[in-house]
Amino acid sequence: MNTSPRQATPATRPLPAGARFLGPHTSPDPMTITLVLRRMGPAPTPAAWPQHPRWPRGEFGAHCGAAPADIERIRGHARTQGLVETGCEPHRRVLQFSGSVDALQRAFGVQLGRYQWPGLSGYVVGCDRPPTLPADVAPTVIAVLGLDNRPVAKPQFRRPLATPNQSYTPLQIGQLYNFPANTDGSGECVALIELGGGFSQADLTTYFTGLGIASPPTVTAVPVAGGKNSPGGDADAEVMLDIEVVGALAPGAAIAVYFTPNTDQGFYEAISQAAHDTTRKPSVISISWGGPEDNWSAAALAAMQSALEDAAALGVSVTVAAGDSGSSDGESDGQPHVDFPASSPYSLACGGTTLTASASAIGSEVVWNETASNEGATGGGVSTNYALPAWQQGSKVPQAANGFAGRGVPDVAGDADPLTGYQVRVDGQDQVIGGTSAVAPLWAALLARCNQSLGRAVGDVHAALYQIGESAFHDITRGDNGAYAAGTGWDACTGLGSPDGQKLLAALAAQATAAAGKGAAAKHPQA
Image (cartoon, rainbow, N blue to C red; front, side, top):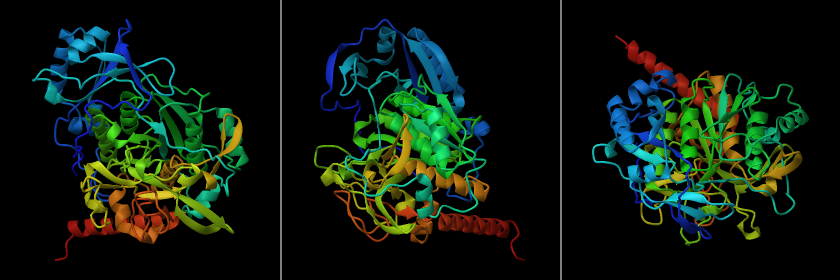
């Protein structure tokens, strides 16, 4: 699979409406940067579940980490510029340095500036041009992160503006989607990536007790790049929604919440650290944050993509919210856009539906689109950066608006309409929340339960899901998200559809049995 961006992406991130350049950045405080290095060999190519061998986390670096010579070449340049090394993790291909503003500007040929940013007090630091490096060093570096700390993503949750038509506990959603019996995620770990906010253990205890969950999940906060569990703001709704959906539907799984700053450096570090975590060993990563694909710099896209590629190679599934602003993804140019990291071919992109239940069964399910009442709509469309993957070749993915044959988004779906939303508890208050932010943890919990039953992580599950097709999904055939309409089979609104968990597990188990049979036949061919 070609994982590099195929279309021109911004060299530096564009300014949104309301942002303003204030002047040069002249702070005396040092800054810490992250350099993401190239691999010492070819990129890992994760094969489809269930045949593929995986590098164990402890051995991955020896095959796919950074080359010692590359590390020394970068160190030499950093020393001549007065930078101080603060971290080196060859298995993740990461070098970290600290330096003054002047030293960093000299080392990377940039001018750092202060920017007023919409919705934020104070200022943020931005970079006026892509960093440059000497000719002998430049090929070794994928990205220099940390010179730009402008926010890169937003949480994909929606509070209803009107009174919900219907709302559900996560347990009720699990019943409607027929989550597999006799599973609770035991033995698995689900990682949540959070770019702000926090949780209260007291709230979680109250919530899970109220649902009748006798043994609530263990929730651990993991600080990354200066981030921390910091409740008290609007992003708490995202954090609590993620934890409560996973914790209710997979209470036997451990939950690790990786808190990181909302920057390209922080986002990259959180995904990379979760994928390579040898202590908690998550088998699923859930991400409910993102931003329009064309708002990312080329270097940030490349760095994030390399972290997601690592996760796939390590057998970790990554579920990502597809966005809550319809086919425009919140852009105002009249063109369709998709959200990243949902648009990565290594992300299981999760779209949204409007789900109505009748007598404990699904009464109707259509594409979530409440744009007319300002209640949001599911993201979905076609990437202008990532080429159509092999596993989507038969899905009739339309071309992007610019004619590019790109990766279609989303892959799967679930209830996301805030008017048919999830009953959760946030900062001491019971409330209803929707958005594709709920669908990523929903699918993370389902995959954790499948992993438990199968006795092995499904990892990069795209090829398996597209092979299984409609037999394990509720095909959503009504509605649109703006530029795209639902139809039979895959569509750019709800992907393959919402899950029938028991049928999905049975299909994955059948694939594993068939693969085992082929393997045995290959080892012992008939005479």
